[in-house]
Length: 285
Length: 293
Image 1 (cartoon, one colour):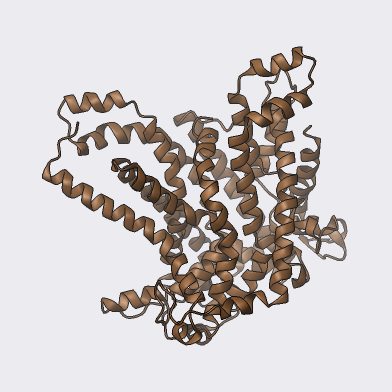
Image 2 (cartoon, one colour; image 1 turned 60 degrees about the horizontal axis):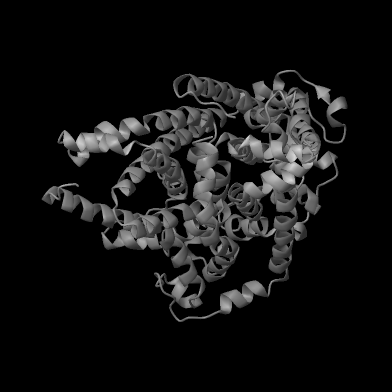
């Protein structure tokens, strides 16, 4: 039964891993992988000598790290606040609204953000104007671009991540709250001493697992929101691979960057999985 | 139960206000784009439109729907979603079922499981993947968008965790009645996993509809772009890519704002339509698969 899936995965996931040898070649698409010229580590030397490389690595880690932190803090806070609502109707309504952006693609959302963040016609800058703030070119200024990425990413994904924390909240034993109330604990103290400790295992689990994403700053989002003006602050490894590999057809060089990224990511993922299985008793299946 | 102290009342009022505000914040950008798309060109370029159309007109939609390429790429997307989801779901079922068995029933289970999981940990990278798809002759065909990603490992894990939660006795009774593993899969496991299957199916459909990057790189001719890839080129690239600072600043005066807004809205319409049906299932489906699994 697994045979069809195995064949597809062999061809489209494992065969490209063989293609990694391109990273050590001056790959020529007409000669193919077997006959291209072997150049050892030259592609890697070339990549690390590129003037763009240091800030691209910095951007990737900086943006990814901010997204990881915000992607933990915001959903946890929202889940706690939602948990305080007594009206089921409003609770469900709010949940339905905040899950929605997750299902829209970055092409659609890129289009929406380009429009609403525009310095002249954009509604966000019009609102800021009401408070006497000068228009900000969120997507065209190197000072603002990375933070705009983080905020818009959180906007898209926080609702969806909230689901997991809400599920964790419902599994906390209600008798703990009763006991706390008997002991005279306020709502605030109950949150601090019952709710948060109850959520801690899942928080630790998701926090450790998110470490594996430290080189994934979000290709879809950046690609749909950046422009040459903000390459300085917004270019990440994945977008660099795309431009070098597919726009400039330097297959070998792009593969070398990709290999670097894959290997570092693998190390992070394996570390985070082993941490997760150690501290949160997590197994994939 | 809880004492309603003045402090708690203030908190509750603030909390309701805040959360309703946040909820609206997730919806308003889409409402705004809809309002822009239904407004006249003049009203849109001066930035007068907020959440309600000004000088209501369908003209931008008429323009969008009269573009042959828009309709052609939409048709490609529809085929992709239907065919791609059917194939993916079949493969997911056929993979998740054997992998949900114990090693005593399926000897190399763990080996196969790691064979699939490893692909989520490490990959050859964009370029070797592209070259592989090209060498298998799929480039510029609909199959390029369907076959290479047909096996969704996360969906397989979600489903196999669900399968493992079902009572084994049901399958044993099926075997006693002379059924094979195939009968057990189609007659017992598949029907019992409908909530989980519905979740995975809808995720797969949304994934196919939203997927734009593979179309962009695997199709040489823009005539073969699915809708998302086409929209990417007309909504995003025309604006931002290949622009210097001056041009980017001039972008502020987009004259085709309503046109773009209309395309954005049409592009997200199928999602907005299926979403109310989808979200009933997915909370249950995901939680069953991830947290308790």
